[in-house]
Length: 67
Image (cartoon, rainbow, N blue to C red; front, side, top):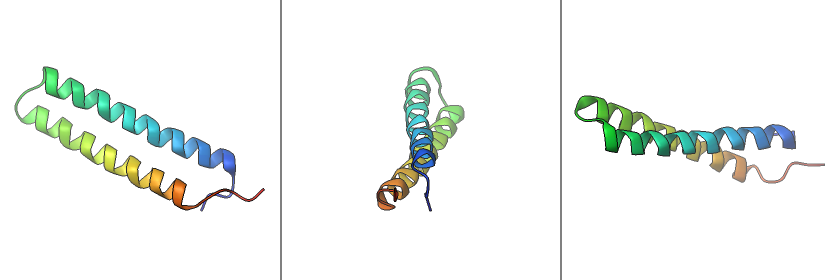
């Protein structure tokens, strides 16, 4: 799947960025929003965390790249 170490690094950075954005949006939703908008933003952040978790799992499961 990942044959280049640099590509693997960038994919993991994207996943970490998704995690960070999810945390920021969750804090914003819990502090500032209410009603249906709050729950829709929290649902989006949940999906973002799940996607980033799957990406990180794939990066870790593929193991080290051959040199």
